[in-house]
Every structure is written in C-alpha cells, then in structure tokens.
Image 1: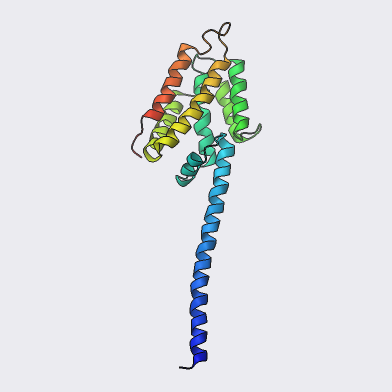
Image 2 (image 1 turned 90 degrees about the vertical axis):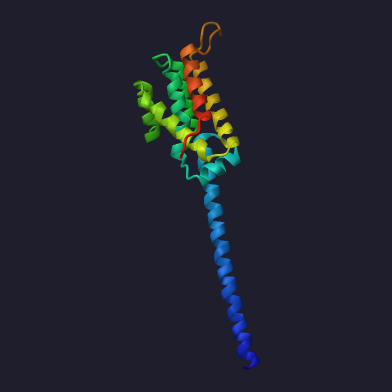
Length: 192
C-alpha cells in the first residue's frame, strides 16, 4: 500500500471522527441553549430567580404555563379563604399575574379574572396539592423548599392585602388555614 493511499485513509478516518465529534458538540450546544431558554421562560413565568430550582424544573419538563399556574392557584385560594375577594386581594393577585408574564388580555389573565369573579371549586386546590406532592417526589428537597418559600411569600402578601383592622389580624384565621394547607402540600410528597 502506498504512502499516499495510507495518508488519504488517515485523513478520512480523522474527518469522520471529528465530524461525529462536531455533531455531538453541536447537539450539546443546542441542548444547552434550549435549556437556557427554558430556564429564562420559567424565570419570566414565575418570578423565581433560583437557577438550581429552575434547572431542575426544566429537566422535569415543567413548562412556563404549568409553573405560572403552580404559583397563581395558591393566591386565588388565599383570596377566597373568607368567601369573598377584597379589592386589595384582587389587585395583589393581578399584579402578581403580570409579574409572572400573564398580560392583560391573555388567556391566563382572563382565566385568573374569572377565578376572581367566581370562586373556583375546592377540587382546584386538591389538584394543585396533588401536583405539588408529585413534584416533591421527584424534585430535590432544596428545590421544593425554595418553591415553597416563594409560593408562601406571595400567598401571604395576598392575605395581608385584605388589611385587618389598624394593622391587627392582617391575616384572618381562614386565610391562615389555607396558607397551612399550601405549606402542607409541600411537606407531603406523593408517588409520581
């Protein structure tokens, strides 16, 4: 075999190897870019800044819409805890919705307005609790704690928006009960 033929085969082998290697690198770059975009979408939809939590949610296939619902359902439940929506509660919820990307006129915003006009059934909180429990079974404890903290902070803000009398009893007993149910959902992972 001549030196020339051997050299051509060596170049062919190297080109094939590097072509495969480059395709794999390109695929990894695309996956990384898609993951970063998904994290940014989740960040925009939730207002959550915890990169580890967002990365874990992306790996689990959680969409921005799911995360937005995950954050909004507790707010609606707290607002309806006493059987009516206070104007301050409604305003706090709608501001929170805009903060997580539900713009006025969007389907998400319209759904939320409907929930504020008419109390959703108890099955909504049950479905939310079931989902959070399932999420707790597959997410790290740290991620669930971070999600719990963000969710409870927002729900408490809605509860406080109703006011109380002269700053006393800013959160009613019925609102505290719903806040407790929300916290309990994060503490009870269920099988996926």
